[in-house]
Length: 139
Image (cartoon, rainbow, N blue to C red; front, side, top):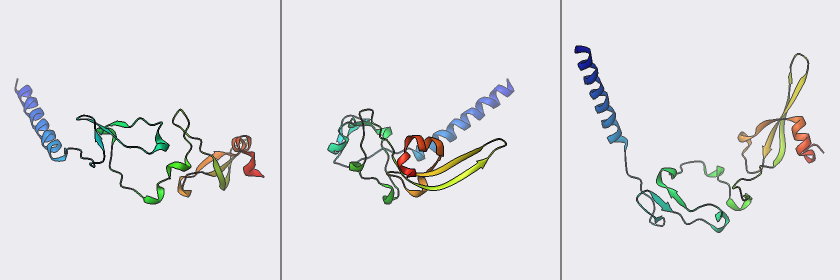
């Protein structure tokens, strides 16, 4: 019984600490007056015509204040979004090439820069796959 009392006291202490931490960190979400309030937890945003395929009502937990690098913002009109709300990232150029030597074969990889990407976002792709999909890059 003694150990049970000690455990209960420690649980109450831990819960109290967590509650006080949450109370300090928790704050109400606020948005601009331009946004349309649908209810206590949803906002209807005015989206540009290019984004007409996106549903304009969002739960407040989905919305975040953006603090970032302005150079990483891509204009919406340059991205062609299809009906599945996705877009094809077309490779623009090859930045680098490397060969990995294994015991019996060599694997060639290429660092590919895609449209709407920064140089530091370029990815390594297999050369043979790139030649099949995008032969114009090798001409």
